[in-house]
Image (tube, rainbow, N blue to C red; front, side):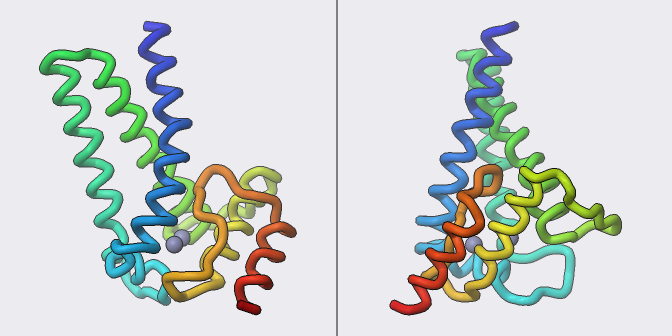
Length: 154
Ligand SMILES: [Zn+2]
Ligand SMILES: [Zn+2]
């Protein structure tokens, strides 16, 4: 049991790395056509960017199915992927973008740091030149602002 929980937690941590890289190189790369909607003003609850969440759900389901079929720890990897997706919805859609009816003020320094970094990520509406691609780790705000200034100058 302890091993399984360790697998789940390690997957959660690893997923932040995977998520950051995917956001930077896929979503802001060849997958921009799906992510673009998320960098534009939008009206409804859903956007084409949500396909990425759907893809994540499919990966999690496939991992759990593979785990059940033969290699049990894969179920916990799948659980970690699903858990990351859930945390992403709560933090990114709920707290960063206020897609929910309640808008709590972010007083907790860690959440505030994530929120401000994500606002800076959205300061750029185009595919290139953005900063801070992670969702649960953010570099210091001042460093990000400096990066943005430098990129705008280029
Ligand atoms: Zn983005
Ligand atoms: Zn966002």
